[in-house]
Image (cartoon, rainbow over all chains, first blue to last red; front, side, top):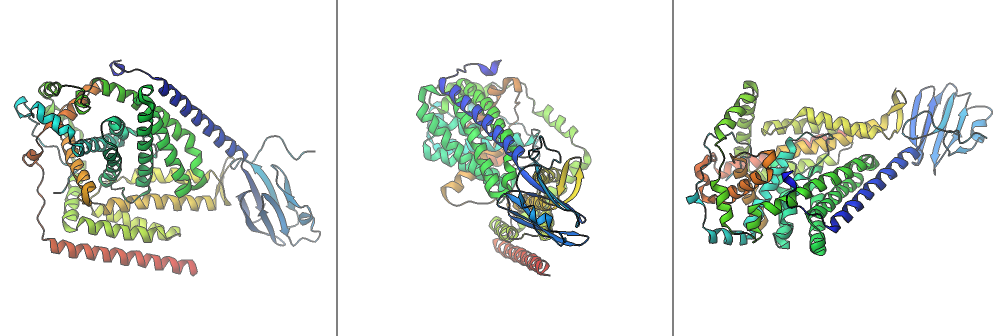
Length: 130
Length: 451
């Protein structure tokens, strides 16, 4: 091709090309892993559904048939802080932090679950199955 | 003298014969004038960015960086001060031409170009014989894109920006390599470059100027006129009339100042409703100023910003498409980001008039670059893809050697004379009007939040 007349590659050209290619590959892997690893808290109740990233501090007031259930996301964990149910099992369940773990307040129909990746409902192996 | 960047095609072909060209010694001394060379190179940057604008873009933010080619070539052509001035002039000039001076686009461009220019110069000087334009170009392109990514992440778009980082950087790698190859080939065979770098005899350039292929100017004009429909021609005429009226009604600095005030107030608003109000006013302003814009392109860009933001779900789930959830907070944030980004763009287009005079030596450089740019786009010769280097070489040679003072004869329009006082008054009125409306919107926004 006429375009390539008089063009000679030199050593640093190749070095820089290789370095840039490695950089692109590294960034791609990092972004891919970060995306797959991002955990989300999925809250469903009678009034609707919510999704929130697990790494951000937040509080959600979930309405249900017997009252409002408080879900608290804090320090990379999610937990039901308060709930109007009589047996308080949900509050006693403690906090969850791994993919596919869940807590629920059945009387108030509130279900809190941790999912992995951006918005996907199904995850891979059930990490909490034992 | 105002710059009319999109002028109608004149029907006078460029007449250049050997007797008009400067003598050998005249040409050499002109190349020693770094200010002049820098101005032409900057104009070449504007031209290349216009070309890049017309090429199809797979993704809205993909900047191919073709416009950095003259900077790449100038790595060993200009002293450091003028080299950096070239980089700055490229960014500022392009921002004025495209009207993006106030927007985030200009911020991206400035950061990317300056860092890339410094990197390229450093590598070239340090690398010596072990490096060619290819390596320098790759490094410059990748670093430029990396810097733009960082700005996107930390200044506007947040964590979402990382999602396109791989593609963006890969694009930098590819275009950097291609441009580097082209620059090497160009530097090897271009006579203009050879003269500028002091390597070639100036006689080589005069042969370029005489050696004009068949006069294609008439054929190109007829072909171009047939392509545009009557309706779009009328629409363009109406737009140019609006533009003339706006540009002769207001002082460039008055318009720019009004834009800055509006931008400052706009950026402090957080509610989507108020942002939308501002946005609509900005679109109206840009229309009244007779600037070219595409609502379709804006819609596409906005949708992609919103879509990207939805990829990190947050808030109440509004709808599900398969396994993908559209969440409220992500949607609202996405809309807010899109409105901010596009809003500033329209505001910028509306308030930046090409005749904007910048102060000092730098202002002169930019003004000269605009003048060269006018000449470049008047160039009637052909640019054929197969003879790319030769044709660009000819373009540079012709634009460079044509007598600068002769521009008046070639159809440059005379500004409609308006008394300066009236323009000042009107500009102040514009400023007051813009401040009032912006302030009003801000107050409204406050009330809505509280109420």
